[in-house]
Image (cartoon, rainbow, N blue to C red; front, side, top):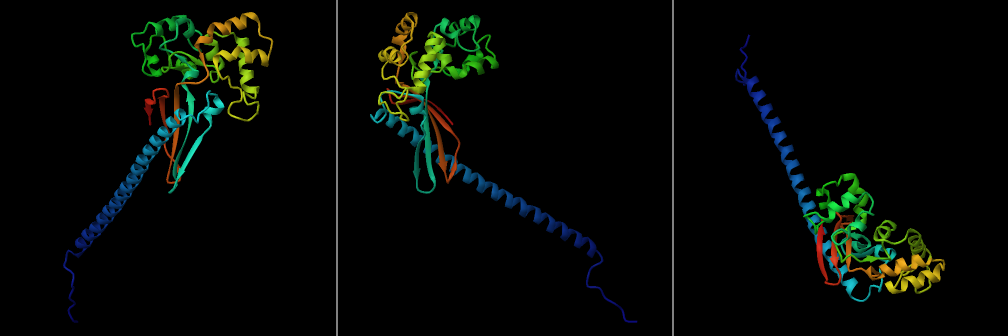
Length: 287
């Protein structure tokens, strides 16, 4: 019988195992490298989009400031006018939208008296006293109130939409909510008339559906407009309004600009800035 020869060495099984392990290792490395490359590409896209969103947000902020001081803004501020979203679109599916929130529709915790503060939701006499006498006053941001003795997260949530650290303490009667006007010292029945005027009046142009609906043009005209609108104000309510008239405004100098950039067709992260309109400068920026 002829002798058979093998072309494989005696340890061919071991070589095949080693080769298989090498192939498996290379496959794992290939997959890992592919995932790494994809993650780097994703990060690069995210970085470019984030950078673009930041530039768009800054452009929106610049436009918003120009719009408020250019004379194109009305001589009053109302929620309807401020909350209208302004849009800007550019080629390539990028752009931005922004609107305003009125910081002077709130109680300034740095200037308010103890009597005003204790009328805010979630605040009693003891907590109001702690706020007024806090060594942190003037506060830089509203959240610093959490460091005041007696303040809790639950209490802060109740009052955070009614307070600010910006402004000179004057309140915009066109935008302030019921709780703020009440804490400020206005009679509740009088506030109800003010709110009805803001909701139902056609405003100075006497046309419904326009930005001046329910607007008071000057603080000095508020009493006259309310008497024309309702005609049932008591003497004490009129005196109450006149006593606080010097602390009321109808156009704000401190506005929060809420910005949403659009990058590559999709909305980006939100940005916000608080602006001193009179001084034309940004006081606070958040990303």
